[in-house]
Image (cartoon, rainbow, N blue to C red; front, side):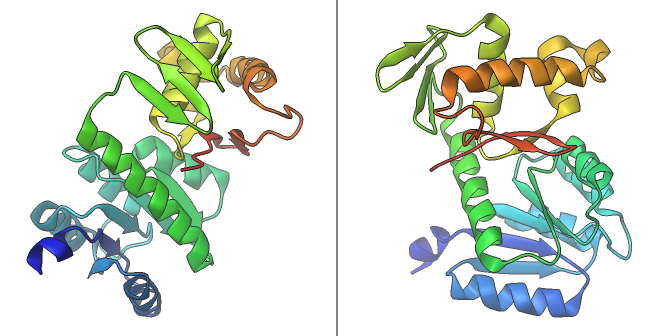
Length: 235
């Protein structure tokens, strides 16, 4: 029985609102998850250390620490996926949380089905950590051979420039996760380019023309307005 339970994903909720904790506890138990909760940042950090959850759900407005501080402290020692759930809906808040190391951001109120979809993506991400760096990435019908620097779809090669390739593989390594403009610019062009968002607009448009079935209505390379981009993980 212990072995069976160990295979069930463990979620840690760090949230001070009692009603929200009750709602999520009932919803996620119904979906078959194991569940822990903390009402302060310090308590949440300690539970993360002692129990190593599979995914952390984190509110930003905690009584002792701001959720950004909690994220930064967690990122000092763990790569456990962090999904921020917050009433703060400004783009600046989302960017700050994602730049601090959060994997995703949901604005309250949200539907359980949407949260479950984000959790599933996060769990696939943790499976990627366990397997280490793989020479082959397969996301959204694309196959990326990292040794050969080759991208194919349905066995047909897609010709990419070096920067297009770097952008696509960076997004693919974090499939389903929002990567902020600042993060993408820093990783591809260096720290001096973090304000040059027009670089991204140009190269994302080029990538969409090459990998999207309908570039005018992109399905794979999704824009998160004012925040960044996400490579859609079709699972």
